[in-house]
Length: 173
Image 1 (tube, one colour):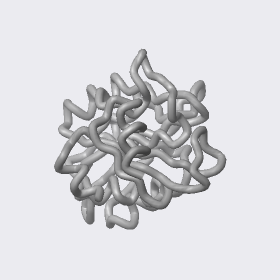
Image 2 (cartoon, one colour):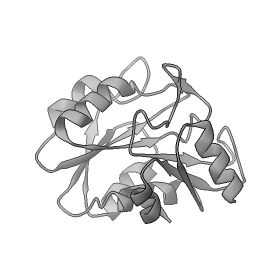
Image 3 (cartoon, one colour):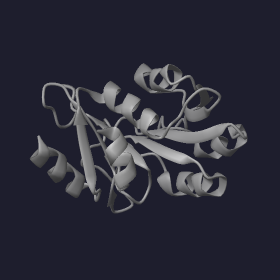
């Protein structure tokens, strides 16, 4: 298991990989590690798997939905800033159908407001965004992967969180 965690982390330019039972559990771990909880808001796309919203709801936080871009089905980055409130703590970027979210402007927004970014890259293991691996350290605090049988890499089941932060890695274990 440690070799798998280490090798996948290296492939996407991350220092730490923490494997878990499935992608849903990885989302739960990411939300918990960032200490997202009651009263917090997390911006997420309208079009995604229910596990993303459930991870936020189970923490006691509120999902704030942003509609999809009609060309990519990913979150409409131009609408993100309009829904940020003083209670917004994070943005969950979910890459859909092999198309990466436009992470550069999303990261710029997150930095402007001091927000975390959780990347759900379950459908994009091995893909690139502007020459960098999707889920790499350039874009998010934690990236979540799934190894469900319908994903690009499968272990029959399983998930993983990756990060560059030793503090977050410790909380994800």
